[in-house]
Length: 239
Image (tube, rainbow, N blue to C red; front, side, top):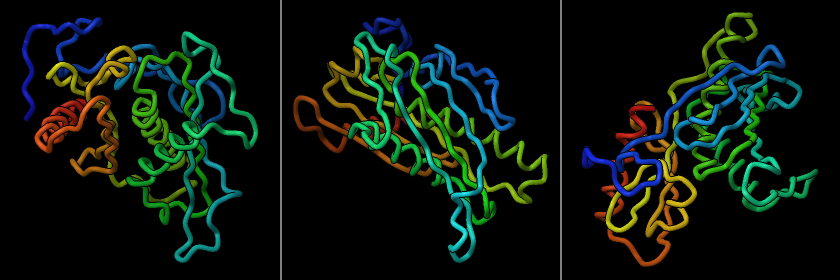
């Protein structure tokens, strides 16, 4: 397991290197299938977002064999979510980053869902960032799973589906190296100054769904990847 010093590092938030930011969720109003809104202390990033998972049915994969439902995710940063105004993505004119993150969220969540257990149901997960401070994609994945779990539980209680399609839980976290130190759950300042940063998506059973990593300043060694993965695994176990 990864080990971290007990005293706070030079992080602005005074967290120790391996510490996540605090987590809280609140129920959102709206459709009967509305799932949680994420408050400013969300893990793995202090990135509040409104997240909903709503069952549909019109777009399910009726012709698939065996029949199965579908799950899709949408991601967006509201104009006031950053220090500089973010232009809205409208219609089919989605920014490349937005498309990439939407696909990442969808892949991550579909990795723990057996869609053959919910034919004629489409889950649409909305991830709207209202205050960005690094790690918005990992926060969205973690919150999206919570939203989906609530929607699935409501469908089961209502008798809309007979079997639970969720076969595992999933969460994601950002991990980086800065000045030789491993930092978990990077905020914007840390992310922009990291020597290496990675996003790790992992199931509750310990299986890896996706790893994204970039050397920002110089190439990194295999040992660095192993250190990051150990730190991510410890962080995600808490999530």
